Image (cartoon, rainbow, N blue to C red; front, top):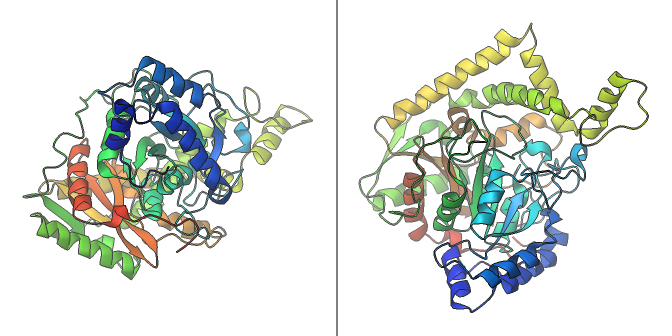
Length: 485
């Protein structure tokens, strides 16, 4: 069984009607993963307790009112768990086991979801291709010679391959939306604070958000229903009421005003991607929306500002990995300083060390005003640009990424080129806004993603517009033949 032709509602109904048990469904899901893992390399750990958990759910009875009851789900391996190791794809955390579960893990389990495994990522979520993992390189199911995007490439790949109906990733500068674009699935980065970050291994604390991957927009809304909400463990989580994101999702876009920034169709965007977005804009007009050209003049500085700010936060957050309290420890140090140096030199990969050094430099006394402070000012200007557009528009649309998926190894030697993959997504994180990628076309057999950006806590509007587009196009119905174009 694969999940290409099954949405969450239909899987749930099969479980409720007794056509299949959660244990049977979990076995089939594990078989899906096992059949493809040698090619895709999407998982870092499997849950040995998954079948037992599914059997326990069957014994208690499937909850008819909870669409995730008895349904298999995967999570990114930077979300801590007690019954599986949490490595963040780094040697620094090899075989680390947490004493507690992340809040989103607790919420999934409370809903009756069966967490079957933990997915691969760029080390400590620092990357745009899932080539920076210390353990393996994940492949794109649409073409095994291409990357699935990053850093949540494993979570995107397993859904795109039809192995599992849903997964969780994290998004610091585009790490949910860009992989969703490259693999042709739906990926949502919620408003900053909408989902608790408790138990997410921190990269950039003012940027990070956890969000869902699914094959359809409505399935995505169901997942966000489950994981959203205030958490006393996380001081940055919002206490704003969480609506049912599936309510009103089918109301269409009649009367909506959608902005299309001219900067999102600039010379740096592949022509095939620009063409797909322009076709999508016409589709929205056919469905009753108004699409206006607008400007986000400071968006072009987003990548530069982000790498100064996020790297600074990473430098601070990763100080805790010192070889003393937990994680990897270098052997035979001469003294305490030598322990720190050897542990961090061998425990971290090149990309992580690059960002730590960049962040430490930006925070240094001689550079703080020149780099960190200027980047923070640019962040404010980007926020103000968004606020201006949202004064008279409901949504902003544009490409998720400037290109389709690139070949494995094509950009791994040029960090700057790799960083530019997030040029469309980073401003959304800088502003703390919700953004979602959904399939909007193909180029040479590879998916093109469209990004919808909303006002703070306006995920419902994004889902409504995304669902309308999805119901009037067939892009989400196309599926990969593993390894083929």
